[in-house]
Image (cartoon, rainbow, N blue to C red; front, side, top):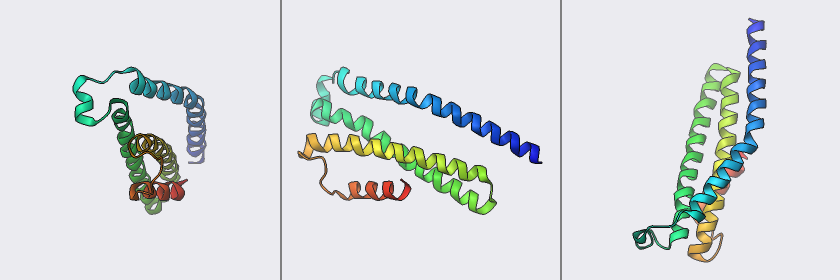
Length: 143
């Protein structure tokens, strides 16, 4: 019984080290991909007529999926937290914590891309919109 727990802990530590090693590379790939999507892909002729000015509207193709993924991560956090409270299995707590970290990361990225869109559309980065306040409360709660 104890030997199995020790092996499981060693496996989790190896996974954690691997994830820490891959994080900078993953972030760099993500930044390059987003930069390419926003700046190098030219909008189609009808794109500006349908969605507004080209590059401003393209931010929404990044912003909305980031926001959706962040809230999905927070739902997963809630599910694993409930599972932990019911079963007292530490693996559920670890998964809830990891999911909360990802949710915060994606919520922060969604806030940044939303601020870029707001500046181009409304003329200011922040205007105390209820959605903006909700994300700040979520980040303050989980962060």
